[in-house]
Image (cartoon, rainbow, N blue to C red; front, side, top):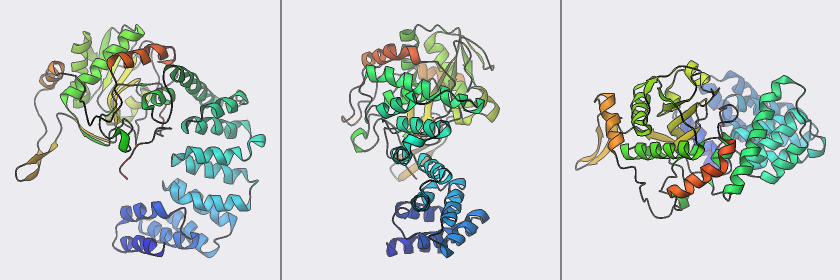
Length: 424
């Protein structure tokens, strides 16, 4: 342990703050708290995080003090390093097991780290005396994100409607998730490998493609880094057409969002679906709103898309699962951590080594036409991904259509029960 902490100290001495954070991540739950806090104090001071530096200094002086432990944990959560908060808050809760504030902050830290099973365990220790809002709601929510559907149902059965209007959105959210999870469980296994089923249950959106690479080595159908192709774009639009046909939805137009990538894909979608294209307007009904990456939108447009108009379908081709957009798409072509558009600047393995190819600056309509002409036959991949024929995808959509396009498109920041390898 001393050697690992010393490596973190050396990275900090060299000025590598992100490297220091990465080095601390695997040590957080096992390093002595005083030693950990001292490294965090220096790290926070170097980053000009005065609140965290002060809290870490306090913990080095009083490593057993519940208030010092809480202050350190709270500051870590606020500064986006929740993994560092967990051991301190656990220690504080052991010393003050009746403290609701400590329990809530520990659950918050675990939830932000996507350690939902541990959050459930912390809440379950006091299940008999949990307050409905937010404690029992958090038990339902984290049970769902941990894949513990039976526990989520049991806890939800004891969750009354909130007296405070501020919690109505949360109540609607978990009820919608539970309804969709029931539909998905009837349509498939809904286990730790069922990425499409859990994506639907948690976000309300359909997932068009499962990555054909690395399924058995940690990816479970998600991409990490993908250099996209027009063929993959066409495959996503074909699956979108299949969803519309299976659900009987008949949009009248395709709405083009602002931005080059959004317009290219929108123009292609209009041709594939046989619909006229027009510029996006908030609140337009009976339309397919098309995005390549929703995170490229301005804040006003992104927030407006959280509310669904009647008959409106939001399609996003490349959905980032590690930093999801503000609005959850009603359908995603694929899930990735990083994507390079087919028309973007790319890396290429040439004779003299890796080369960077310039972006494709052809007119938007010309690239869109190339997508329309492309062969959307799925990449066979490495042979280890379970088969995903069109018939199985359409059957899932048909079986779960009753829960689609319901509720808001609220962001879900967790990958849920199906984990995937990722870059830190």
